[in-house]
Image 1 (spheres, one colour):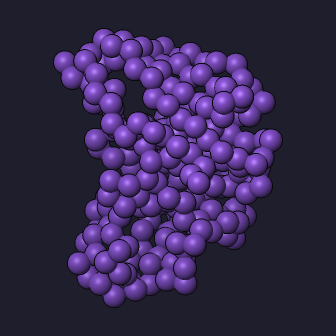
Image 2 (cartoon, rainbow over the protein chains, first blue to last red):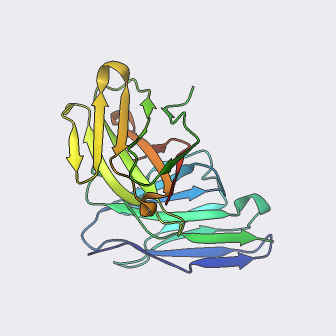
Length: 113
Length: 116
């Protein structure tokens, strides 16, 4: 069964460092998303991406964040200068079309120390 | 006001009991989608069901069933004859037309603990 894959599964980084979280969406999907979940809290939308551009972003997705689809298969989230409060589980998701229901990857746990 | 409210923070049942997880939503759109996701202890988010706002027919999938009632803005999820493997956090989510359906707004989740 096709799935969304994320790497790494766990990343530890020092405050102020840049991190790149990587995702390989399901191959025939056209819409890509990043969500995050601070430990014990609800899942929050960060950004959606379609046709090589951001289609929606939340207030959380400030200038420290960027997304990119550098080739035909990868979808990345970059955090330029990490803060302690960026520590969370980051989920990549993809969907064939909007409203269809996103399929999520297994997540990357980011720990900023 | 929250768009998706899951009032039950945690539910504990004994195996084989039936359990219903509540979800109440709020939207100004007439067209929207509702979802349920399961998050087991391993952490991933597993898609369970999608329902659009025009389809109020209840759905059953094995031991799972969903009751969508527009009149009360609710989309409740029932697990029949619960099993230990059902232990997880369950999230209800909403996707709205005015956002182009491009985002999911999640509730805070209900942790279900099924004991043997």
